[in-house]
Amino acid sequence: MVDDNRKSNLPPLTLHIPEPQFRPGDVVDYSDLEIPKAGAQARPDINSTPKDMRDMVYDMVRVLDDDHQAVGPWDPKLDDEILLKMLRTMVQVRTFDDRLHRQQRQGKTSFYMKCTGEEATSVAAAMALDADDMCFPSYRQQGILFVRGYPMIEMVNQIFSNKADKLKGRQLPIMYSSRELNFFTVSGNLTTQYPQAVGWAMASASKGDNRIAAVWCGEGSTAEGDFHAAMTFAAVYNAPVIMNIVNNQWAISSFSGFAGAERTTFAARGVGYGIAALRVDGNDPLAVYAATSWAAERARTNQGPTLIEHFTYRAEAHSTSDDPTAYRSAQEREEWPLGDPIMRLKRHLIHRGVWSAEQQEQLDAECLEAVKGAVQEAAKNGILGHGLHQPFETMFQDVFEEMPWHLREQAEQANKEREIKWPS
Image 1: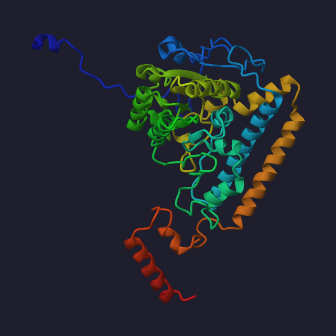
Image 2 (image 1 turned 90 degrees about the horizontal axis):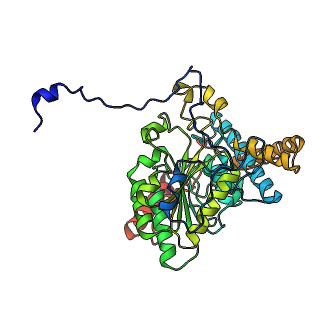
């Protein structure tokens, strides 16, 4: 029992409330941010145990240096063709984002989310996976669909919720799904995909398959219980899964400190679970590719799960429902020390002598024309708010494998009433 006199000498308890360094109007200074030299990070053996690579969670895997060269042991040594495809795909994603954001502002859809500045975390990662690996995305991984060849017009149909929308208008715009391309349905309920991905990976292993899973969430979502439940199952059952945390510094309006960034890195969460973990420069496409490739090989050879923190920056608003100027300094994007993933890869390819500024301008123009064409074609199928685009009976479809009797009865009754009120 503590003596009352002793208690009276103690300061009153206080609660720490995380506060971002910069608010609107502040001058931004990232000089205190530790950015390690590119190429200085050791590349652990694929068979390394998690405890032997704990320091990796406080370092940062980087490949592209300030002179636009690929350096160090993490250099994936990709050929020009793959790098050019990576650049083209990231440009396609950004062009698509810009155009569809504009469509939302014109009232053709209700909602949109861009991934500007984060393209490498989906495009480069997806290119390091096999096409039959299962991806469980969050809502900024549209780059996976671009890598796997999903038609842009199908994406726009879904965004417009029109009569050609394969999801029949049931999902919020940008929440895509493609079973054929092993792209699990995007969920607006954050981090639900984490236990789903781990469960899928466990099922793949239990069947003796060779397919692995990859899952993404933002740094804010790591505070969700689903994240920690998934980490436990992945560690206990050695699930063949890559768990990506896209640390873009901000949730919709709260900075990463509210999810624990003031205390340690997000990659360090792997240490407590005994899971191999890496912290990666998320604006370096080569580093993202290399880390994902390394983690994929671990998973395929029964070395278990890997947690990857992609240290990046959300260059624009959280969504079309957000105004970032209300809570962060406008200088943050300009001062971000890790630059822009498209610019960095472009400069690397120019340095290699296989690309030029003129070719980049041509690529930008080609991507813009392709996106314009997809939007125009999709608009022929309708845009949001212009009538009921899906046939009435579809509300009863795709819910049960075999529709139960009471729903069949309701569907028949509803159709009869509809015929009476609205005779054809």
